[in-house]
Amino acid sequence: MFDMTKIGRKISQTRKNKGLTQMELADKLGISYLAVSNWDRGAPMPDISKLPELAEIFGITIEELLCDERKGKIVEEIAKGETPENVNADDLADIAPLVNGEQFKKAYEKADSANGGFDISSIIAMAPFLDPDILFELIKDNIKNGISISDCAALAPFLDEDDISELLLNLSDDNISIHTLSAFAPFMEEGDLGKVARKHVSAGTPISSLAALAHFMNKEDLSYLASKCVVDNNNFEQLSSIAPFLDEKDLTDLVRNYLKNGGNFNNLSAIAPFLDMNELFRGFYKNK
Image (tube, rainbow, N blue to C red; front, side, top):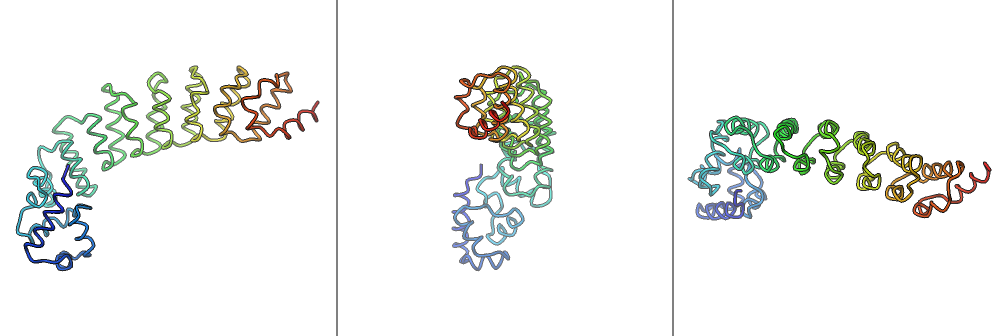
């Protein structure tokens, strides 16, 4: 990684050696003095489009300015519109904050073809700067090569909803744990998350294990899970794990039907706090 503090000191000291104030340097570059002030403090890095001009004003090379000969040379080549050779994943992760999307893509494609692809740790480092479509293809290739889907969970914030759904819906339940699924859940479309959850339940996953997903699921899928708890096995302990996320009326109606069909009221203690008891008994005794 570039040493931002070191670069900031370099800019500040060189500017002072040239007898330039922050305002004067800003005027030469056509930027605000606040930008120069931020550079002096090492936050953030100068934009790549300004680096050649800044280096020229200072009378030094971009490599000297960035305090890193190898990565400075890569940045200098990109700034000139060239595609650097022999770039690796670490280089890309470091230069990414300095370059625009198109510049990064060209450097990435060159590095990818030269190195035969990247491992998951390298992809995670580059993910914030990759186009979502490219990132998705990389993940699929890595899964084919034996990388676990759990290793890819850290990439979820950088993927499109549709790509996450395609990824998870095409996996067997054995290949994705509920823990991993819960890491993807905040970034999924509700309906697709429900489909994955239903697959797990059909495969025998206890509904109580899905509690971590409930907050991100829609009303219809939650009602389906609740019905499975009551209709299939009268398991109110499992139902209690998702009860806080259920619509009170839907839960009350479900329990009313359970009681009407001969269910035992003593089984309801685990979910009682989430029921509208007045409505439950009003409807129940009215129908009696």
